Image 1 (cartoon, one colour):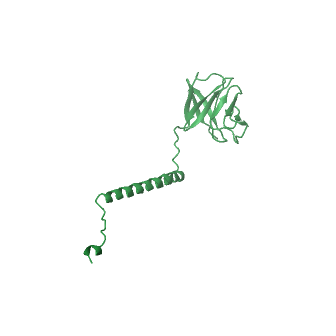
Image 2 (cartoon, rainbow, N blue to C red):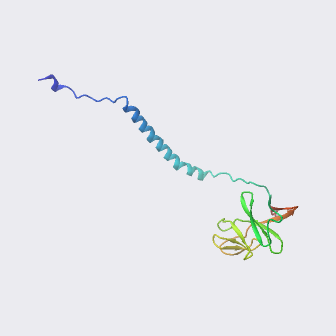
Image 3 (cartoon, rainbow, N blue to C red):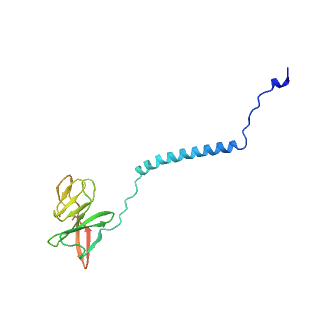
Length: 161
């Protein structure tokens, strides 16, 4: 018998370049798993911990200047973090109300041809006093007080008393 017949097969040992490649692939896969987990968990956390609502204004804002509105026209203005609607009626009286529809929170607008406040989302209609006339809105619009001071038109929340 020859000695070459009884030799054990040679075991391949990993070279120095094999281990860093394996470590790189493992790190890449681990990072991808963590990023995927974060992408699923972050929206859930944001849902359960909503951001605080910021009120950008006080009880009173300058909605417009005298002369900005023509008779029988309206203007959307910012009242804190929500839109408001200022209307100058055909008889020269200023009226203001929330511009957020009470049905699905769409923004309402003044329709001079109908002399009504109209919500385009589901054809809801309100009177010039904010009272709901027709359509799906369940409640009237929140009415605001209007005061003209000098050349500025101030709108403020109504005080219940």
